[in-house]
Structures are given as C-alpha cells and as structure tokens.
Image 1 (cartoon, rainbow, N blue to C red):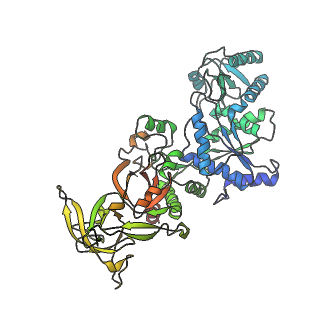
Image 2 (image 1 turned 30 degrees about the horizontal axis):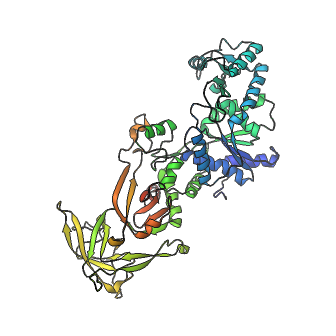
Image 3 (image 1 turned 180 degrees about the vertical axis):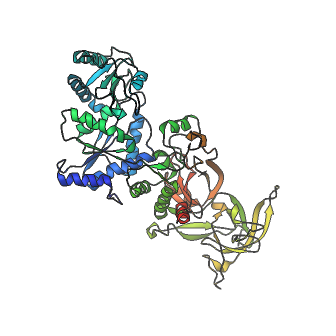
Length: 561
C-alpha cells in the first residue's frame, strides 16, 4: 500500500537522521504492540498508520506484537479481532509475534539483573509499594526487603516461578533510585505472582512480567529500531532506556519516540467505559455502529481508506489535542462520494398518486423504466433501470400544505421534477384520521420524460421517489452522537454521564428501489438526497446511516474563517 500524505514530522526526521548516520545499519523496523484485552478503536487506527506508515515509507518492516502479559484480561478472541482489524485497515504485519514468546528470555534477564544486584524480591503488597514511592516533591521510602542478598533473591524468584507463593504475596522489583524525580524509576515492579491460565501458554507460568519490563526487552529481542508510542509513555522512557542499558542485548538499543494520540470530540475510547456501555446494554455490542471501535466504524460503513487518510493527514505532534469528529466524517464523505453507488430510498413515505397516469388494456397502470446513472463520480459504474408507475412514495418532508418561506418542493398547485422521470404538479391531498397528509394527488406532463420540459420551463426542486409496486422494504438506523458533549465528562467528571439516550432511531417502514436488494453485505450506497448508508453484514434489509450529505466540517471551518 502507498502511504499518502507522508509528512516530514519529528519522528520521520529522527528516522532519516538514523539512516544517514547508519545507526541501525540502514534498517528501519517498527512494531504495533496492542494488548489483546479488548477491541481496537479509532485511537489505535492512528497508531497503526504511524507504525506501518513509517516502516513503509522508509523501506522497513512493521511487526504486530501482542502484549499478552496479563492473563486475567486477555483472550484469543481479542487476538483474532486485532488481526482482522489491521487487515481491514489495509496493513499486513511482517510477522505476528507475542510478548509471551519471550517469557523465558525475560525471566533469564530478570535473573541477570538480580545477579548484578539490580533487582530484588519484595514481600510488600501493592498498596504499600505505592505508598513507599512517595510523590512529586516527596521522597520515597526504601522497602525493608531492598537489602536482601543476591542469593536470597535468586532463591525467592525461582520459588515464585515454581508456584510456591500466593497471588500478591511477592513481586520482583528493579533496584534503581527511590528518590528519582521520575516516579517510574522508583524501584518499579518487574514481575508479579498470578496463578492464572494464559490463553497461549496455559499454566506454564504463574509469574508474569509487567508492561514496562516486557516492552523494551521485547523490542530489543525483535531488533526493533524505532519504538513509537503515544505520549502517555514519555515518562516511562527513562525506565525503558535504563533496562536496556543493563542487559546484554542482541543488537543496538532501540529508541522510543512518543507522539500525541488521537482524540475526537463526542468520543470516548476508554476500554473500561466502553465495556460498561456494552455490559449495560446502552449499545448492542463492541461492533455497534455508534461505538468508536474499528469494528463499530466498519459496521457503520466507514471506509478504511478514509481512516487511513484522516490519520495520515492530521500528522504526528508532541502535544495532545482533540480533533473534531466532523473532520473525520468529512474524510469519510469524500471517500464515499467517489466509491458509492447511488440508489433512491424513502425513509418517511408519503403516497403520491398520478391521476392521469396511463393504464394498459386491462386497466393496470403502465410501468416505465428509466435509465439512471449509478455514480456520477465514476462513469465505469454504469447505469441501472428504475421502474416508474402511477403510484409512488415520496418523503413526507417533500410536501407541505402550507409551505414555509423558501420551500420549493411539492405543494398543491406547484410543479416539481421527479428525479430522472417527469415533471408533476400536485392537485389535491387526502388526510388520515389525525389530519396529517396521507396521499397527494398529482398530474404529470408526458412531454417531460427524463425530467426536462421541451418548452424550457424551469422548476426549483428535484425530488427522489420510489415506485410503490416495485419497492423493496428496508429498515434504516439513523444515528446521532453517542455523547452529547464535545468533551464527555468535562463538566460532570464522568464521561458516561453525557451519553445520549437518543443516539439511534430505527425506521421500519422505509421503501427503496428494487436494485437496493442486490447490495452486497457491508457495502455503502448513497441514498440520493439523504446520505450514505451501509448494508448490515448480519441482518439483510438493515441499513446504517454512515454520514449525511452535508459537510459539517466545511461549515465549521467557514464559521471560524
């Protein structure tokens, strides 16, 4: 894949410098290291495009490495979903690796640090260890177990591995500096006892490395050159470097570089909060189209190409900022405009009866077919035949008995164009028992086939329609923001307090042209005048609104300009 919009940002500048200086022998190797404890979300898409994009741009490779060091939260299901999501985004890892592949080497290196007097077994519980660390401007307190002998520590660590100790009873800590200004350097935990079954290694291990201990060393084992992380790991970089500097590495030490993660307005990516939305039934699952997971975005119809372009174009910076979700939607709309076939669908049907429509010898309404372009942006998509007869449905909002100012659509006595068909004029209206319009009667001008009048008269509105006798019934899901505020939780302190209770509306009486029934599962089509809609992969006849036609981002930029 060609990475568009390759930037001259600070990460790429560092890579270029290392290449020019021959730091890694002309190699560039990155990795994407998610933990298989949940589904990837839009923030991960940014990290994926950075990791894979840098490797591609500089002729290197990018591996997928699963950080599977916490057996209590990780599952094979998540591992499989991560692989699938990366492939959907358009990337192929050079290798698929696991931190658990290196458990034996990580253990051996931990023993090496103990033998150097740089690690010790601590019997303190996690709360005590946390308190011992002190705080910013407050000195730490050394553990009473810090002075254990090398022999004691080697014996205890071996017994930890052998399963002699209960969960939480002992940890292995690095011996660095309890007064270091960087809190992560105050004797961090390297291993904890956890009698849990790992989804890959089973019950082979009952001690598991922490992220900080596994991460940099896994990079070194794999010979990663540039370990690109998000900004929350910048305070961990001194520890990353310290560990690597103590060990007999198989290659040159990798460099960790941090960039700002992707955050969007009206969006939450916290796994804990997203899990609560799923568990509480607020959404229908991790792939609910309202979710910011890649599975949810995919189901909603977001094209992978649009996500890649958006993540690439916003670039990498050293400062966290929140991107407007309207900007992402603009990329989605732009991509779909070029790739989506056009179809006509009516979401809120109102009958339109053409009283002067001809009938055949048996009194049945004549059926005509109109050739309509599938996609004006791509002539190669060809045309389709759409049936037209004397009874149609139009959108309820396209008719008004008492039209408001600047209303140019259908009202009694007004002529409008039916898309690709004829000019029609409304003559009267019927009402339901509640007094609402239930049927509009009209006449058509036979001389205007194709939608243009031979005498050159003009109309101010073109409306879409569906022939009732040829309609394909569908269900449509319309979506609003899942969170009502731009920054969920900013005012209340809890993001879930800002969940929109009306984020989805299901319309079950929609009608569409017959061609829509042929839409492949997962494909996105444009409902003319209404927006882009994705065919649900599991429920035939269900369409999710991906985005509307109006470019809200352009409007926002105009107001700011």
